Image (cartoon, rainbow, N blue to C red; front, side, top):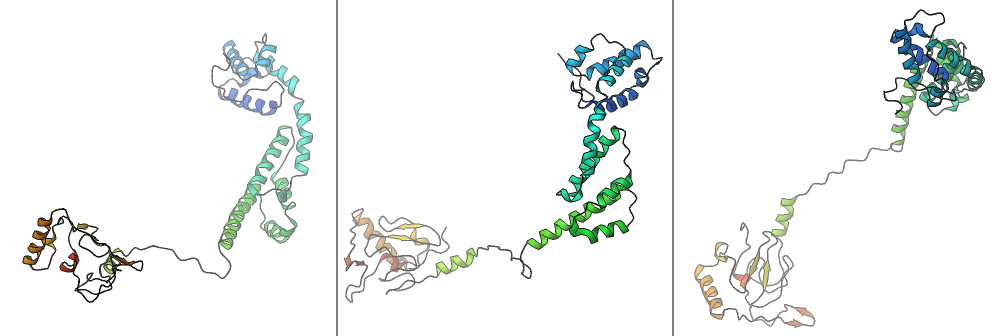
Length: 322
């Protein structure tokens, strides 16, 4: 049932590792609530204000600390006890912070932002421990830790005469971004080369269809796509009265066995010839004889000088037929 209300600040750890930051946060929140005097010695705060301050302090303590100070009801006494217990953290943190400050170098970081973050972290700890760090100290630390290859650049920044550390960091961040952009442009392609043209695929469907429609077949015969030769344009399917005709343009199938397909709509042969042919098919019914002949492994070969007519000889291409 702990922490029923939402914590306003991070609770003080029982080890005291966050004591310095906790003290600062607690003082700020108590002042904001009008309870800042409750933790001062010889204060004249009312019992109600002391109770409010005590509730706030206990709510932001580790469970173990709450148990240890269970009998303390005055916020000023609790505040003093915690200070006696954890105030030595300054003597623990200060040596390490000084060491970090001494070895802080700009050249050791991959980016300016990482260096800037480390700078503020170290200086904040030093200030909490009572050390004084000025803008001049931070500027001097940055200038003196440039990489040896950037001696000229470091001199140029010094000559600009920055008064604040934030001004120097702003210039360094902008320069870093410009350098990254320059490297990206340089590595985009080899020096002196031209950019690759855009590859736009265009399908000339109309032209392709037109070429297909006008593909000619080889062999003898009357008209286009006709004759006894091998149909290279549409691909012949052999010679005989029973066959299969396929148009690459309309993608329609024409069955020459049963007379279906409404040929009369696309046929340019005289009507009386069409009627004669259709009537002959009706007389035979479905008993249509189909002969497929091969000679030397090749079909649809020349058979003397006899002119042989196929069904396709009487029809033109079914263009425009949907």
